[in-house]
Image (cartoon, rainbow, N blue to C red; front, side, top):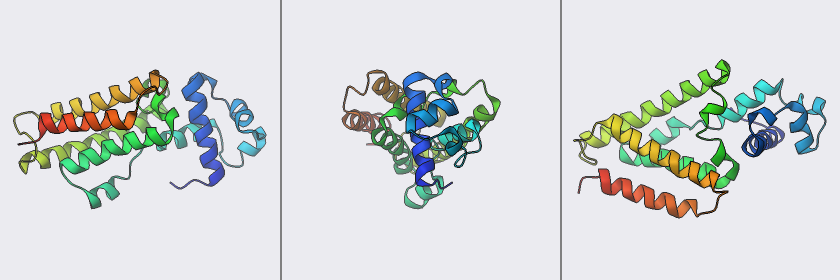
Length: 189
C-alpha cells in the first residue's frame, strides 16, 4: 500500500510515540499534537486510530515477490534479514517496535494481521532454507525449523538489544558479525 507524504509522516510519528511511551500513549490527540496539526486534520488522512495502527504494522511487511525475483535460497534468507536491519538503521524507533508483537497481542484486529504477516514471512524463509539445504549451500543435518529459529531469534535479540541500549552500538557492524556467524554455522564448506 502506498502512503502520501503526510500519511508517512503520521505513521512515523505514531512509531515514535509508541517507541518512546508505549502503545497506550498513542491517541489521535497526542499524535496530532506531536506533529503539530489539528485532530480533524489527522482524520483527513486516516479514518481513525485503528487505521493508523494498521498502517504502522504494515510497515513491518516485506515485498516478498521482489525478494524472490532477486534472490533465492540462502541469499534470499540473508536479504530478508538484511532488510530488517536496514529498517531499523533508517528509522531507529523501529528497534523498540519491530519485534514487539506483545504490544498488539490483546487486540485481535492487530494480532491477526501480525500473525498472518509472520506466517507468510516464516514460510518464505523456510522455503528458502530448504532450497539452500537441498542445493548443498547450507547444512542438511539441522532441521530447517531449527535453522529458522536460530536466525530469527538471534536477529530479534540483536535488534532488541540495540533498542533497549538506546541505539548505543553500531548495528551495521554487529549485524555483519551476526550474518558472518550464520555463514560459519550453517554454510557447507
